[in-house]
Image (cartoon, rainbow, N blue to C red; front, side):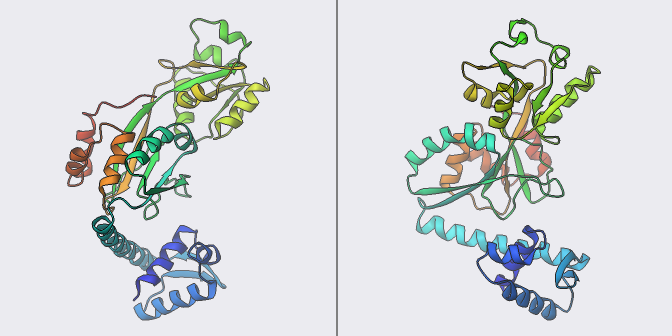
Length: 323
C-alpha cells in the first residue's frame, strides 16, 4: 500500500466518485488513478468501490472503513510535514481557509490585513464552503480552518468553536414606505415580496422560524446567496431584502438603506472549525485570535485535549463579537 494510492482515494471521494475530475484535481491521468485503485483493491483482496460499467457507482461497506482509516493515515502524514515546516520555517507556508462569500468579503479582510503585517511571508488560499450532498460544509483534509455561518454537526474528529454572533438587516429602496415606520414588525415586512438567502442557509432558517412563530407565511420573490444579487433586485424595486447586517452596512448606499432587525429575528451563530489532526503552528494561533479574540492560544491548547462536551462547556464562557 502506498500513500499516493490513499491520496487518489481521497480525491475520488471528494469529487463524488468521478475519476476524471479527481485525476485533474491532483494533476495526473485518469488511467493512472484507475490502475492504482485496482492495484490497491487487489492487494487488499476486497472491493473498495462498486462499479457500473467503467464508472464508480458507490463505496462498499468495507470500502468506507478502509477510506476512513486511509484518511487518518494521510492526516498523520500532513501533521508530520507541518511539524517539520514549523521547525524549519515557522514564518512560511500557506493558510488554507474554507468559508462563505460574506465572511471572505466583509469580515476576513480586516484580519488578513492585520495578520500579514506580523507574518508577511504567509500566503492564503480561500476556498468556498458549500454544503455537500449530505449537508456537510466542512472540508476535512482540505483546509486548516473552516469559518462558516451555518450550524455544524460535531463529530469526534472535528473541533467546533463559536466565532461570533451575527444579525440580519432589512435592505430596501430609500423611498420605500417601510423606511418611515418607527417600529417595523414581521407582519409589516410580510406584506412585501422578499428577497433573501437560499433555503437551508442559517439566515433563511432564522427568518422562517421567526415568521412561523407568529403564524406568518411571507412570499419570497427570489432567493440567492450573493448579497450583491439580492441588492440588485431590491434596487429594481422587485422586493425588499433580508441579509447579514455586516454585509448590509457595507453594500448600502444612498439609494438602498439598511434597517437592523435585531430583536425581530434572533441572532445567528458563526463557527471556526478544524480537524483535531491539524497541527496548529504559531501563525495559525495568531490568525485565529485576530479573527476571534476570545480564542487565545492558551485557550486553544486546553481545547485541543478536551472532549466535545467539555468544549461546549468552555464555549459557554466566551464573550463573542457581534456583527
